[in-house]
Image (cartoon, rainbow, N blue to C red):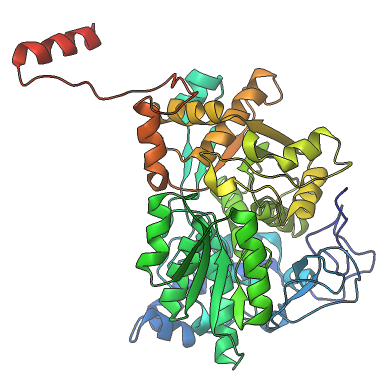
Length: 510
């Protein structure tokens, strides 16, 4: 099955080969001087608003961005009838033909402001405590959910994760001088899922206040989605329900939704089975579906791509390597990069690479077959458990993003991904197995010279290594069957004896 080309219903919609309408714009562009005045006034307003009340109350007194009422977004089919559209306030997950939906912004309205304005505005907001702009997601609110009230936003100031220069690893292991790792796992619940969940739960909070009969939010998960959903739902006081595949996620991932008060259903199936069940349940009960089938999640996740450009002073990397499971994140990153290009903040797109575990590689198989025929598979167990998915919901979205960026798909065996993570750890990182998949694919692309020594490359680290400590313990203890553990570093047992300790140290330091 080849990917379906999305609708180009709106000019500069962030999708399609150019995204530019043939019609001349009828919207007057705000002069460049306006953004300078706006930037200068932000400090004054922040000081004035800081007189009394919480940061949320201060936000309620803030003067809104001029012309912000013109900004809007809506659901449209990812591919299909260009006249079909829905309000973001509707409870809907698929188009009339059963396809996925996409969030489409009024790009003409956003284009009223020149690129320099958006750059200055985003740079001014980053890292502040001003509600809700201290969040890496909501600092770009106009590009995420422009119609939502600041008071409805549920945020833990997620995002703003560090872009780590992998100097020693790149230089000594790969012969690269411009390798970076985007540490999306340095977030509230330890994964990139926080970026999407703040957007989705905020919208649910808004709809519940409107009187929509939503009793709870729910998801199927391989661990990280459930952790993010439970935390943000708890912060908003919204009940949450998570479907987890029994004995297929780490203990750290399991305890997070339990601690945050979710109803946790441990089901004797895999993720794909949990996903089928949650879709059936949400069709019958007033539970809002929080999986990446729901395109609201991708609006938050796309801000990581915008953030990367911002951290590079609006320069575009050559390659971006993303671990791929359900594949929503692949399209989310594409949307973020494309939106910046369409609005003139950058002039090109990075080449996207998706890295899959060999044991769960349906996209890789489709790529090797020229995308002629996609077939879902039964995913086998992998240490990269969060991407152990054989029937990804966002397959069409991912293929479209890859085709638009001349993208690449690679795979890594269990031994390759564990060795890659351990080898990189020896240079100061602490990688989850999914980042190990991306690093293993990067090594292969360096070996065949697809990626050159001077190519600026960003590896997306999707989760924190502390969520997967047992796999690291087993690797270094040599307890994983079939894996030699080339970079294992087990502790050395020594008697309480000075001579014995000195013998070990002399042997190691010689």
